[in-house]
Every structure is written in C-alpha cells, then in structure tokens.
Image 1 (cartoon, rainbow, N blue to C red):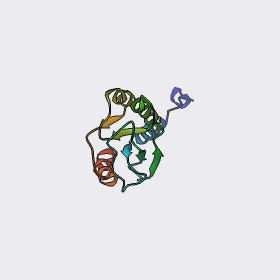
Image 2 (tube, rainbow, N blue to C red; image 1 turned 120 degrees about the vertical axis):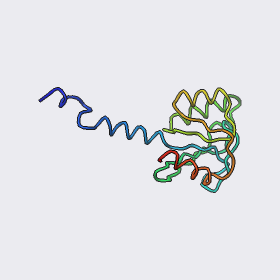
Image 3 (cartoon, rainbow, N blue to C red; image 1 turned 90 degrees about the horizontal axis):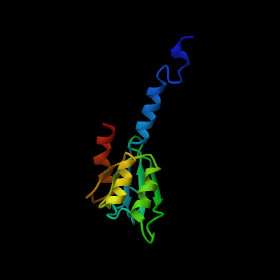
Image 4 (tube, one colour; image 1 turned 180 degrees about the horizontal axis):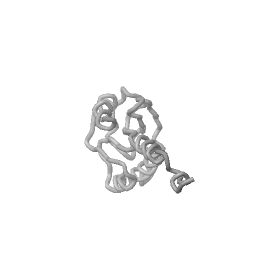
Amino acid sequence: MGKHAEHPFHGGHLHNEEEISRRTKEKICFTSQGKDFSSELDPKFGRASYILIIDPHTSQIEAVENPNREAVQGAGIQTAQFISEKEVGIVVTGRCGPNAKKVLESSGIRVVEGASGQIDDLFEKLKNEVIG
C-alpha cells in the first residue's frame, strides 16, 4: 500500500467532489412575483414575493415564498443570507441593495441586476452561459 492509496481523494474522488460542488453552485436564483416559469421577475430583491431556484441541468424549480418580504428592516440582508444557504451561483433581480449584494458576493454568488421580464425567458438566456 503506497502513500496514495491511503489518501481519501486518490483515484479521482477529489475531481468528482469538486465537480459536484461546482455543479450545485450553478443553480440560478430569480426574485419572482410568482411560483413558476411564466411568472414575472420581481424587481425587489429583499421584498420579492418568491425566490425561484432553478437547476440549469434539469430545469427543476424550487419555489420558496420569501420569508423576509414582510421584515421590518434588513429584508435584503436576510434574503441574501437565506439564498446563500441554497447552493446558488447566480442571483437575477431588478435591484439589490449594497449590503445584501456584499453578503451574496462574499458567498461566491454572482449578482445580475437590472433584469426584467418573464422567468422562463431570463432562465433560457442564462442557462447556456452556466452550463456551456
């Protein structure tokens, strides 16, 4: 038994774990006015009605009612923290405040602002960029 056989990442396991980690961070998050692809993007980040998280490989959608939309204060930061726990790589919204943006970016999440339109159209444009 050589030195490499004892290493837990020998034999390509490290590559596989990196691949899984990279792929889970590719999920695309949209602030949305509704729960599905036909919904309009919600221009508000912290007070968006819904958070849609879509896997670009499967188009599987997770629709979550934004738990912070009625927050008295700090809705943007709380929403950013919520999203950062969801294995998201990109957030698409109308406008994201500077503090919420800092939270997202410090979690390695790219923020795309100034978006508008239907979720399905926005998703199709970004999907090819994410999965190549």
